[in-house]
Length: 309
Length: 109
Image 1 (cartoon, helix red, strand yellow):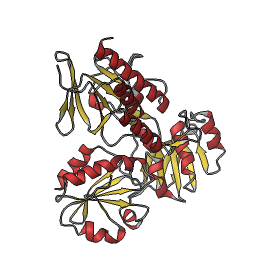
Image 2 (cartoon, helix red, strand yellow; image 1 turned 135 degrees about the vertical axis):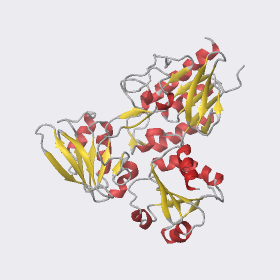
Image 3 (cartoon, helix red, strand yellow; image 1 turned 120 degrees about the horizontal axis):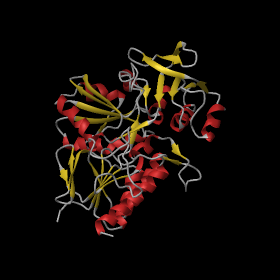
Image 4 (cartoon, each protein chain N blue to C red; image 1 turned 90 degrees about the vertical axis):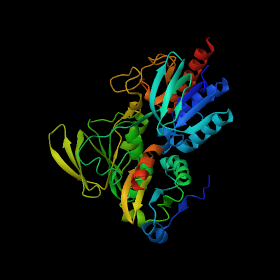
């Protein structure tokens, strides 16, 4: 019999924590590995207003603190660790996890709940000026731009919600979007378009971020007219979609073309004993509410597999 | 979660405590309103225990201390800066994993 835990959950966002709650209640010996501390992308949001049960909205970290307390109450062990390699060992009936730092773990099952990270624009100046005016977290970095002019790039829910957050701090927000209408949910669109501090810049893409030591301006291209222009801003906040945190899996699991893990409705991946839940999974909607559902289902599926139901 | 190994440094003490330090120093620039700063805090505390006597591990609250973050052009938090003999040897932005911080510390030792 392998001496590892029944289950290792990789990642401590809403999917991983929910899987932990369900697994511990099923009396599976469970370890959750988190490379910083629990929370994931929820920690970079100002507040959450679409997760049921909080009619007055809830801050990202208050929600996570509650989830962590709930998981610990049922005995979830949360450890600091970053998984560097994953290898199934069918002969031994375990999955071998190699951690950064050299330690290994041999659980009987694994739930990958590693979430996703913001995409970069991939334009000149972006890498060099990250932390010097280029940001992927308005809640973290917005206060450095008090009464200044900034740009938000993107047109989805995150871009619009963060632009609205920034209006509480900055003088003006240019909302740069490559199309002529926003993709964000209607409620957020209505708020943004009626906010006097937000000025949409339609049909435009950022070609270059300029500045010697700090962001000074953006080079823009209008895709309709082909016109090039320069926009003077002190900060640029980029929200152009996300990419899954799955590179450590090194093509072990079947994914879609963007690297999101493909599962069935039991959250089973293409490899026996490995499950996936939350934002790292290929699915139509990535929200706290859908991550929570994935996590519960994945733990349930693990329990079924281990108990031979 | 208080930890005696992590010192809190102010603008006034920055020169004597960090720039004049005879061992390398890592400063975690943070603020109470920053979620990822909270995420990285336990990692910083763990490293402080581990590197005690080898690296001075400090935190600076950017709300209470505006001068030093301004001097180093910090416009994102958490930002971790490793100083050696008064100069910046490494700057890390965002809540990264412990392994990445450790490899930066190893290079500074």
